[in-house]
Image 1 (cartoon, rainbow, N blue to C red):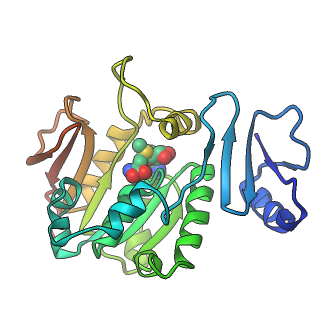
Image 2 (cartoon, protein in one colour):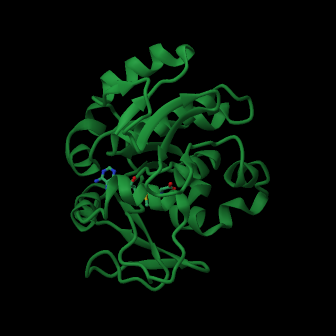
Length: 254
Ligand SMILES: C[S@@+](CC[C@H](N)C(=O)[O-])C[C@H]1O[C@@H](n2cnc3c(N)ncnc32)[C@H](O)[C@@H]1O
């Protein structure tokens, strides 16, 4: 894995991020099948072993951007919004940031969202995408609602971080990598890359226990027919075609 820099215009950015992420950089592609590189469109990850094309997070074009631009009055009724309770504009911690899609939707609905992502590569891709979204008039106000942190949520949430920064937490949202998939299920290309980068999130039950001790509400996204994340029964579920949101009301009182 390297940072590839084939254009001089990106040399400073490449060197800076390569140092920050502790990933070596090169101007030669030979011998490297996976690399991060800056292009005119932004920072992207390329994995030639997976034959999936590039992974570039983009909040301003494509399906998600279209969905956000066309949100109607009933947008608080979509399952994710319903599970989180976006009408009340809660302060949300997204403990499993990933590509930031769910967090971006929540922020577009007026929630203050802290995204925590532990993979330095996904964090870098997200950081770059949010920077671009901040420079675009149509998404600038959404990015204002987002704070991005590169950390393991288990440690950060259990620590005094939010308390010390005077940040309340109303809801913690978790969308860990899905458990075993039906082999015939087509795994989206971008998900194949994430699976390779972050693995299976085997510690998600531990993260859940920590979250439940901290927040008054924890929402866990699962495949519709999957087992709950632990033996604990959800207080209620919000279900759509393929997904189930298990909602747990913690014992913590604010
Ligand atoms: C399925 S993806 C989340 C997708 C995301 N909801 C979206 O809308 O793009 C799961 C992500 O959670 C991250 N993750 C899992 N456990 C974590 C933890 N304890 N701390 C921080 N990130 C975690 C993984 O690195 C992975 O990127």
